[in-house]
Length: 259
Ligand code: SF4
Ligand code: SF4
Image: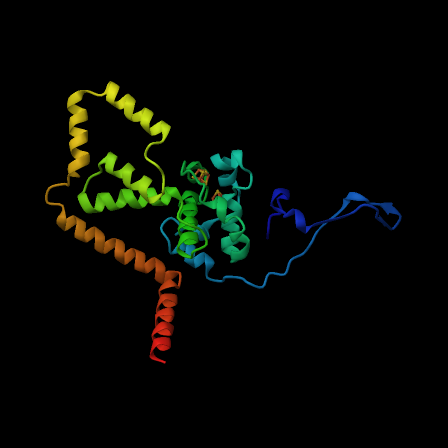
């Protein structure tokens, strides 16, 4: 049973009559408001399964639509259009095109986990938000958000070196997101660090940034992690039918070149 929250009804679907009398009763203006019915013909019957196959989305089927997540949500408090409960409903109903109308705000979740603490069904809505963002990106509906780029750079550094070096991390993140390093706030932060940190620590930080240190004996762990990440990423693409698309495109391309 759908929940009709007024804020979720698209303005273009509302119908009113300036002048309307029904059986002698004047129902002009908002008294005669109707919601225009829609015919949905493009259900994605696999949408819930696809989200459940991505990390964080595993328990989406448990949701009973109580709305506690949205009620507690930090982002919803400043933007009522940010509505985890509604998106979980759309996924469970397979309403992909409806979900895509909100694709530019879904990734704005700040991972505060307030929703997760209040959820009575252990759906882990914060994880579902992550799975949704990941799904949008894998399907090519949105570009990678800066937060995702940061996660990638961070993970790459951990896997390759077994430790994090902040200077390198920030430089790579800025380079990949096309941001200039000379931003005022960053220059100010560097100035304050230089002013307040002990010389010995600053020297060690500078050397670490140049040498990019790695954890001793890390190569075995690095190979195992790389293998695991590749396996997981292939599994996610398979679950979304993306590997089939790639294979079909490859076959089409080889057929075209053979002809
Ligand atoms: S984790 Fe995301 S969805 Fe959950 S309450 Fe925080 S901002 Fe809202
Ligand atoms: S709090 Fe949990 S059960 Fe309630 S709507 Fe949100 S995800 Fe569903």
